[in-house]
Image (cartoon, rainbow, N blue to C red; front, side, top):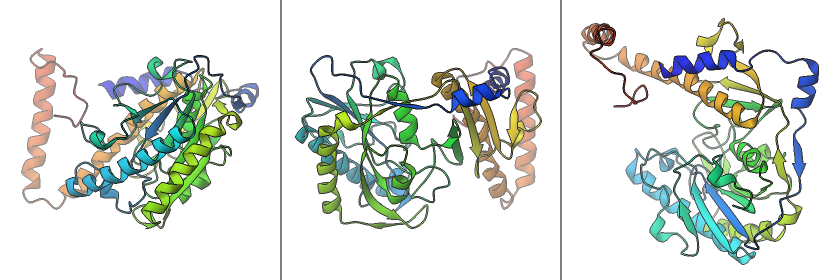
Length: 360
């Protein structure tokens, strides 16, 4: 029911085709000078993902379900983050805060917090990065991003945007997660000054020529990479983070042009084909486009569309199910349970829970 409601919201939240004036306005993203440091405390936020790490060439290292591999990934992550923290303090930072921006499946932090540089403060992801807690004008002076990945379609190591099979377009350009975060913090005048990841992400970030970028590995496919020596990379991470902070005044905050012309395109294993032909939905070739009055509204609509697109993940169960012995009996039991759930709900015997589809 939640996802059906999200589709209805999207149908009424500005999916109409804009006129030419709107298109021109939507393309006018701006680069502005960083906001001044009003409190005299140079404070930097380090956001980390987990796919663009030094020493890492196996996708299982960023997925909590593969415990032995994931434990190695935690070590890669902590080492890279500590190198960047050290460089930021070398560059004059007064405070460094660390934010977990990865979704490994672990309910606990991906970082080995006990091994984190003791000068930094760790903030587990208990609020989205665009919440007021993170975007107060005096909260941060710069953002550094560690272990990031290329966008969907870039052929980078584990390249994607937000989740599997999703491509996001903002004002005519396909964007990466670092760019989306840059738009988020740019609203408060806070620039992204540093990013690390593979060579494909480096190519994706030509929209941010001022950043200090460290290429930690060369992607050879979405699941393989040629690695650089870890010690060499860590030295470079530290040096680049220092330069980034020392050159903060040369960085730019990215501010999105309004209204926002956005689109979500799905590729396997996701799909948006279920929305084809729905009145009010602008759909073509696995892509839904819309216009939003603000970045926050665009983010909400993007999230809703991702919720729709990722329901197609469950089609993989159908492929697996074809080879299961006794599948006919299981299929009949599944249909019977659906029938009983409907009857119990209509009778007031089954209250909906807060669990998302597929959750226990």
